[in-house]
Image (cartoon, rainbow, N blue to C red; front, side, top):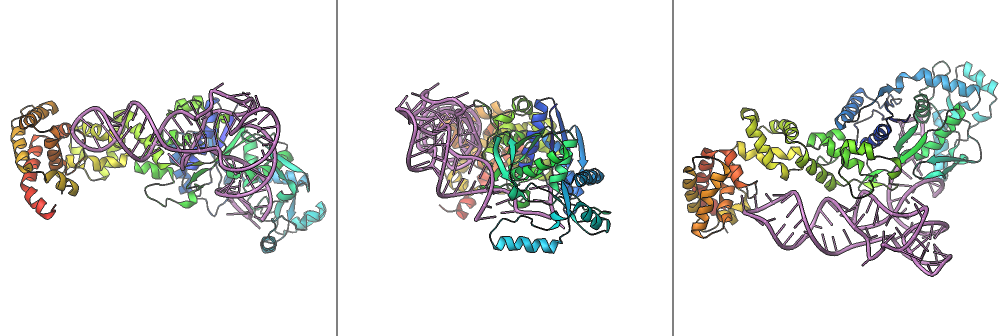
Length: 493
RNA sequence: GCGCCCGUCGUCUAGGCCGGUCUAGGACACCACCCUUUCACGGUGGUAACACGGGUUCGAAUCCCGUCGGGCGUACCA
């Protein structure tokens, strides 16, 4: 059975790159009818928070990514790790290093200054097992290190890069550290490479799918797999998600309010989970042919690891927006209405005093012009409130036409005579009037549009008027006609 | 610096393993036109790419080498 996992560290929100990693792991499990595990990598107690865990879980649920097991918390699995560490010590695969942090920092700095790569060269490796154990028993602080072979290479079998193309020299890996400093009685918290390996192995993970930034960690993990006698999973390293050619990182925070890097930030702007999943899946994965719009179920069907791309992908905001706009137009209207309501209320529009059918029609009217839910309130605002002003460029261009005020009053008079207030019945007299005067419909429609909405652009005018109601329509038209001389005086030429 | 990864239109990508069918296809963005009461949607068309240099070959985007460029890593973070 295929078993995958997503293993975030709870040190912030779930960002879009992480969401993609989670999605691909989840898709692979679902595609194969396998199991998807959620594991929280909270061994760094300094940085981990419960709030972060909650937010990550929330974001995953919002995206529709569910898990079959977990969430497991590594901070609760310490005995397991220490047990395996003791096994490794008995086999002498690891050894305790007694150097202090200060000594190590100095050694690293020295290597840096000499422009060499830092590799641990402490003397603890040479201690006899018995001698080391004596110091352990005496309570000396130490950290475990891996007894890495001094020569040879570690090959990293990799889905996208081949079985033996990626390899690391042991001499450059060195005797890396396994856990934070501690004592025999009070062992220090183990570090990422170790807990990750132990958990993946113990949880039966068959496919490790993670970001490419972990490629360098993999040889160390392979060393653990071997020492512990665990079979190797299949490793797949996803190309990075870039933003402006830099790795998209949660450490960048949501710097630009329009383009949050967090999943929750996108949700709050009115991006859809459907669009997010679809768009993010196209970053580094493709389907043969030209298909780019996928439902989650289609993704589950189509997703295979060998269609993954090797090169990093830049996050294109325009395309994301476009996808979102597509879902805006193609998701069921009731879904959109339901999701739009909170945004409309938050904008202070009194939507709840309106009939549900009216609201539905109002939203339907603007939907194909919208790309984000957050854009909706501004797009329907004039249906609730009279315009507080008129677009300056419209005042100049539309209200500036000869005889517009008179035309508006004529239109108002015509509309007063419309008994059946439906868009067809509204359109007819206006269209006839335009013909009679020998002018295009636009010559009448544009001034009315500006008078009624305050803007030069809106959905179909007659639909807008229908929703607005006859009284409001006529009041606004007459009011505008009256205001035109003053408006033009204030905005000459 | 060192290690690792990557390199097709501005961006996401197809094609590359199995060289000719690629005068390099699609999508987003952009431009023009059509539709039209405005905006948008939709439709049609257009601009635009195989990083560079060698090699192998009758023939290379596709295979090999080098160069250059970009990214990631280089923690008692994950």
